[in-house]
Length: 350
Image (cartoon, rainbow, N blue to C red; front, side, top):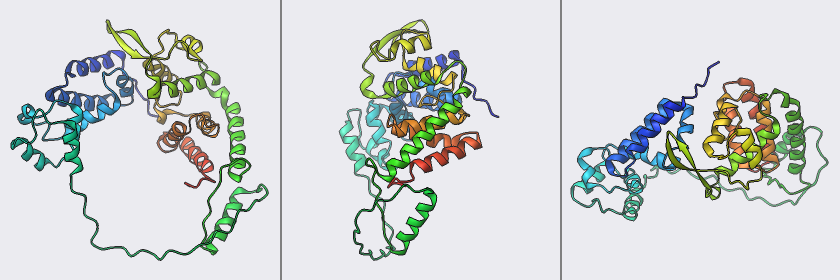
C-alpha cells in the first residue's frame, strides 16, 4: 500500500516564504508566483492543501495565477512593461487568442492602463465555435399524457419494483417524476437507508482511531463546514508564524463547540490551518483531507448520514463520490458506489 508523505513544516514554510516574497502584484511577480504555485502543487502533492491555507491569496486566485503564468504571451518578458498589473485583468487576457493578444499589445490597444472591464469585453468578443455543418435530425417528439398519481405499499424488493416500473414505462413510452415529500416512496427509502447508515456507523465506530471518537469526528466535520463558508470568515486572529505575527481566519470563541475543539486541537486560536492539520493527521474525511487514503467503511456511511439528515448534502456527496472513485481500497470504492446508487434510487437526477 502506498503511503502519503505529509511534507514537513519547514518545507511548507520555505514554499510559503518564496511565494509571499514574490507576491508584489506586478506583471513579473504575477508570473513568478504563478510558476511557484504550480511547482508547489506538483512537488507537495496532498501537502499543498496545508500550504494553501497560509498563502496571502485564495485558491481561486492561485488558479488564476497559474493560468496567467502558463500563457506564452503574458509570460514573455518582452511584453511585461506594456501589460496591466492586475491579476484579474491578466486572467481574462489569458483567454484571448495568442495571435490577437500579441497584435493588440504591439499596436498599443493593450497598455498598462487596460481595465478589467475591457479585458472581460475582449474575452466575451471571442468568436464562438462553429456548429457542425451536418445537422442531426431531431426525433419526432412523442405526445404523452399525464395519467395521475398512484400510491403503493412499501415494496418488499425495491430492485424488483424498479424493474417492473421500468418495464411498464418502456412499454408505454412513459416517464416518471419522483416526489420527495413526506410519506413518498423516496422518503420511505431514505428513512430506511438512514437507519442502515446509523446501524453501520454504530457497528464500525470501534474501528476509529483511538484518539478520535465519533462525536469529535462530527464536531470536526461541522467545524470544517463552518469555516469553509465565506460568510464565516470574518473572525480573524493574530498568530505567530516563523517568528512573524500574521492574521488568520479562525473559529470564533462563541462558536457552539469552541471549547471542545480547543481542547481537542490543543490550541486557543482555532484557525483553518490547525483544523486541517489535525484532520489530515487523524484521517478524518472532509474537504481538508486526502480522501484516497480513507480505509474504513464508517467514513462512507457517515457521508450518507450527512446527506440523509440534510446536514451537508453537497459537501458529503462530493466526498462520497471522491472516495468511491479515488480510494486506494477496492472495497471502499465498491461500497461507495452502492451507497451513491441507493441515495439516487428515487432521484429525478438518477
